[in-house]
Image (cartoon, rainbow, N blue to C red; front, side, top):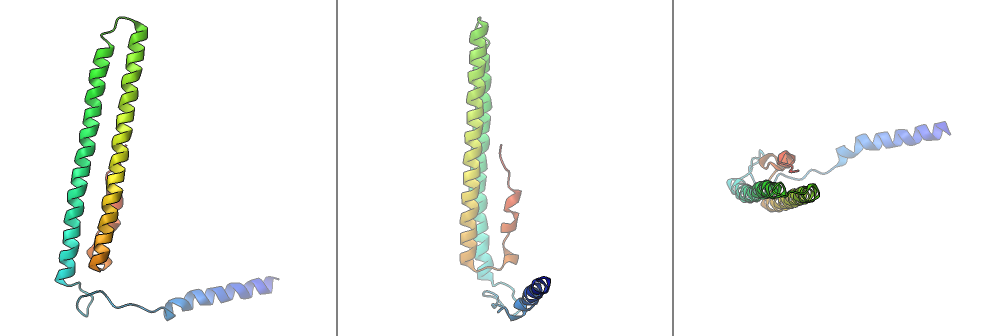
Length: 149
C-alpha cells in the first residue's frame, strides 16, 4: 500500500516538474522582438486608463456627496428632534434620524462598490482588447481603491 502511494506520488511529482517544459509559450503581443509593446498598444492602454480614472473620479465624487448629504440630513433631523418637549418624542425622532443616516450611508457605499467594480471590469475588458502585456497595465492595483463603509 505504501509502495503504491509512493509510486503515485513520484509520478505526480515528475509530471509537475516536466509539464512546464512541454508547455508551449506564445509570442508577445504586437511589439518589437524584445517584447516591448508598440506605441499603438500603449496608446490603447492609456485611453483605457483615462476612461477608468474619469469614471472612478465621478463615482467617488458621487459617493462623497452622498455621505456629506447623509451627515447634513442627520444634523438637521437631530436638531429637529431636540426641539420636542417629550422624552418619548425625542427618543423616537433621534432613533429615526440615525436609522435614516445608516440607510443613506449603506446605500452610498453599495453604489460606490458597484460603480468601482463595474469601472474596473470595463477597464480590464478594454485592456484585453488592446492586447497589452501585463507589464503595461496596472490592473493589479485595483485592490488599492477606496473601500467605502
